[in-house]
Length: 447
Ligand code: PA5
Image (cartoon, rainbow, N blue to C red):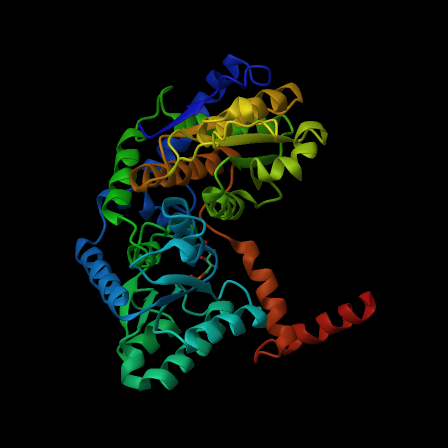
């Protein structure tokens, strides 16, 4: 098993019988999820995806990736939320947080459309003017404003640089199989398209073409990634006391009921920082509704021990921590043995940094437990493709079970619409005139 949950540090905070008492609710959540009888069941296609994905499209993803690798120095991936985070997270976890500095033989990959910052777009446009580039535009709805704006910019640049026919060979659209403006445009212009399945929501879509095309371009072994997820699908399909994914969901819920309303996902590998962001979207958008939900936060240690460490040790006690422990990091380096001790590091000379990092982690766990923070440990063998695929599925299923335990629909996101309506009204989008007046009044009063 690639991922294990260690609960040894939780004893001062959760008694053994509490897990037993929540077990019937976990079983009920499991039955709702697997039997597709729970709220949002029409969006549970991700559950069987690792064993039941479109093999022909998977092959097409690899072909498109090879073409992009051959004709482009840069791939611009345009998308936001679930159409952005997964691909970036996996590239950084598997390859490096500094992928664009270290990639050899594969294009540099930049992400756009995850904000409306002109400053960010200007820099990327300037880079693309000098390079051969391709664009993967990802939007399930095909109508999201932020990526649509970025797509206008890069499509225009592609057409100026390569002509309309050349541009169409460099645009890949990942979207709904039949609906939406992106699908219509792609069909009209003849762009190659990939599908976001109807029954897979954005934040659960990393193992569809949404994630797979950028990953394949970056040289991530997508076969191994899917195989890892498939292993998790099989191992985590039984509801029993050995199911670590279910135990994790249960413990989160037990801690939440004790007032631990914030979960801090902590890793000692900077390569995991974007996986933290992916986790935050997955759990935040799935659980934060009906005035409930654990607030997902994250840190990367030891960096953040020098910023958030004080709070974690000694601040408000409304949080628990989940440490992601990576047994075998991607690379090793030793503390140089120079035969001197000018810096007081002689006692570490020749030690691997993975050992130093491991001791930092163990010391931190014990200190935080002493400080009153319940600590769970998710141990993964590595962040390589197979193990990461396993971890991704583990998180997805834990999130679904956690949502059902909390009594929410983990597959919708009604709250995301509110800011959009206000933004459209304030920008003067036709059809929003009524709201615009009321909002402008409120803004005037507030100033
Ligand atoms: O998880 C989700 O559903 C959201 O984060 C979406 O992925 C995000 O809003 C982007 O939507 P779309 O892919 O339709 O552009």
